[in-house]
Length: 92
Image (tube, one colour):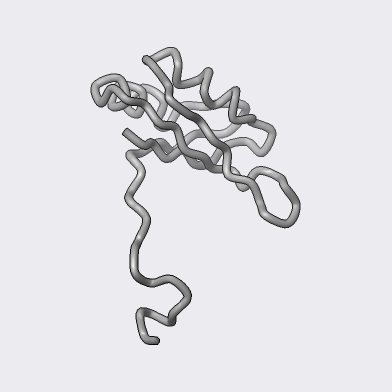
């Protein structure tokens, strides 16, 4: 399951994010999304957990808890929207 984590402190690393979720089960990957220009955190990231039960437990237990001074928002990630690409609302 792919998990979306927002409202992260800008100092949190991908490794720290992974460690936070490993307390609930196996973590396949954890990635903080970085700004393309500055290389700094954008304050959100994604965690991949292969076991859905463990992932749901992690979401339930971590959502709305404080981590490094900020209250986290944790939800199942939604799939990327497809087909809009570089068009304006789908108009070529």
